[in-house]
Length: 180
Image (cartoon, rainbow, N blue to C red; front, side):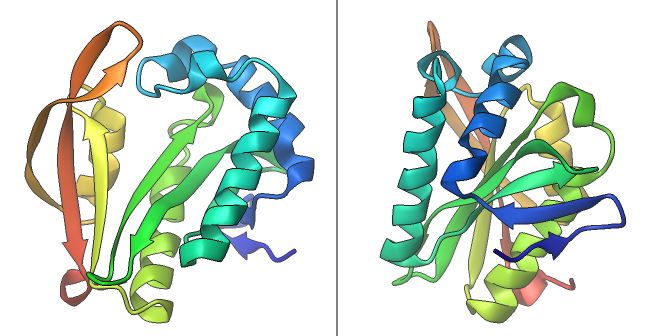
């Protein structure tokens, strides 16, 4: 397994089945924090649910080359970043990410998205990368803005979160706009 350094304390590692317990424990200890933005938290009730997730992202990699990785900080799993599949016809993907609450404010997501953009544009020769974030998710939106993504609009009632729909903001960056 390879690791992709982010800085002296952090790295990205492709997910393996052996990470399922780390993923589950991170979700379980951050349920209230994560549930505000992520629709799958209540469905993650056992380590096996995280194993199913890891197998799914491994299969997605086989199908279209999309990568999902753990974000590690000081040898502890801090979060996840991944492509939601690659549309090869249009050379585009969407990146999603989340962090445990105690890992926020360390620049981990910004560094991770930067690495994913380098990989997407330089190695995969994609043309477009999107980030979709809840309208009220200011931290997630700030990542896109910090990396010069362009806000393209609002998808109204685009995601069901447990008991309500929520709006999503769409940000995109093109290969020609990426400085790296």
